[in-house]
Image (cartoon, rainbow, N blue to C red):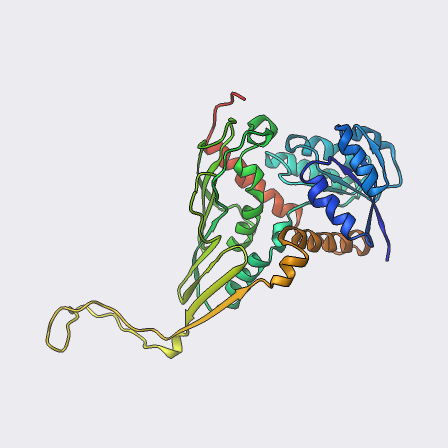
Length: 359
């Protein structure tokens, strides 16, 4: 098995805790040979953990010719300019989310990657979340009938005061957390076109000037309504996914799902009537029936959660996919065009909710 040589830009919560951890735990396919990080202690930690060369800035890596993949974990507002430099130097690049603030930046990066003949990917590992995949499996099976609405809630109660709640650093719930559920939402919405976007954003508990409450509705003819909520002021978070269909529904938390549905052929076929409904004694009656329900449930295995952890499992599946792309020319499963549609939705949300800047 070919071992790919990797450089990581940044050793923060993403570069160290997600990507770095994966490479340490899975050394067969990837080997970290270089790390760029401005904080000295983090460079020392990386040097000890990976046995690699370290630099206080990413510019030193631009001249290296022995690197198969650069993982861009710089702060969010640097994702576009740093990725652009890397692509122009001929590196294969995996960029952390959010990729960009504007769709035109994504278009430029897509064009540059094609011109330079490199692989450019975006780390949307939540596409491999076990719960999301189960929800999509049940929807795709057709047992719930035509899907009318899908609600997705990535909610909690928190007060942030770090750089990721500042607009000029591309902070805020929509750009920080949003790429995960929004990527899922657009896959569940279906198609390739941009849906109609209706968004309301607010600043609730944050110390910064970016939003920490997002309510987003996606709609379009022939598609389910998507109701996406990303709130930092929800003290009672409930289901992560709720699906409403013409033959049943589903609800799911992070590691469990349950659904119920009826089979049309097992139940009466109704004919519309215009007369009042009455009991046998001619008393007024409500229009109701007793359907024959079928139920199912799913729970992510405790062993998988214990051995891999939710984030580690998603990360592993993403890197397996990327390895096939880099070594066998397999197509990316999270395409740049899909990411571009996501960023276009985010851009429209910000256009509808212009927030003042003061941080």
